[in-house]
Image 1 (cartoon, rainbow, N blue to C red):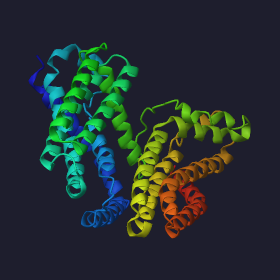
Image 2: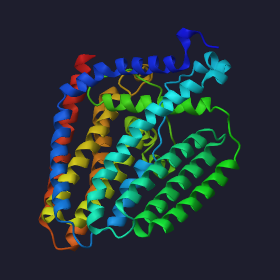
Image 3: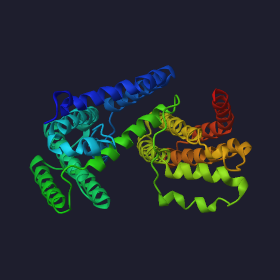
Image 4: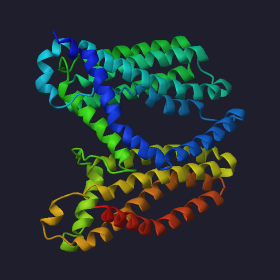
Length: 416
């Protein structure tokens, strides 16, 4: 047995408290940056748009499509904070049979947060569904959400136990797909039909999870997930203040890496290649891609609704453009303390110029990809002014961005 001072549940609480104390200073710097005020503005504008929609829901509102899009992610998302580290393979793995209370604490605390998020999204969706929905009653929708959330939590744990990453990704994708189909069934059909379909999906998932080889306790997977979570926290705080450097996560991303060979292999393009490769293969690139996907979806939905003659779509476009540019700004700090810059004969005087070039191209591509789904639906319906204003605003920001980025780089150099 573990000593009383090393009780598994107490150890989890201690680690959770240590992590909260660790990030408290960065939360203070984030609060001083004005970011909470920005979020308050976004919340107020979103609340106005939401209540406007609830008060006058269009008859042709795509209630089922919207329900699937907003409910599937929050019901399928099943995180798990374990606060495990690499050294635990040595110190805790021999006591694996005593880790039950530790994992239960992790599961219970994490599932509460994900359930709270799902409840908030569903409560926002139900008033709209009540007006134009034709499927199951609200009570049945809530019941289905609870069942699907519990099933996804169990499925997420089984996926972590799988021995092969490819099988894990395949089953996770299948779980998200089945969840989306089940949500659509509850929003479209009667309760007994939706219940029967959900049961069939559950049986199919159960059979699939029983087939692959599994670990009893997936130590390596849990440690890797914890490292990714910590890296994302610090990537966010890195937008406001310097943070400790964590091991970077490198991913090939073949759908982006084909661009790298197009950069000329020459001395004067050293930093172009470096920052482009960093952008494509690091966690920054992954976050930017997710921002683009979510932004494109939300932009299209708001543009298709054409609320306030398209100006809501313009506001949402500006919001995602700001978030995209803030995240992209973290690229300047990735190699800030790299030693190799002082070892190899690289053109230090060109680093800032080439970083700005990469930043400008990436920002232009991101703003364009966000503009298309926000502008095309409006243009097709004859609404011209908001798309033009969005485009002019994006071009104006692209014009002033290099000067602002250069000042920030110079300020960072002065601090060093």
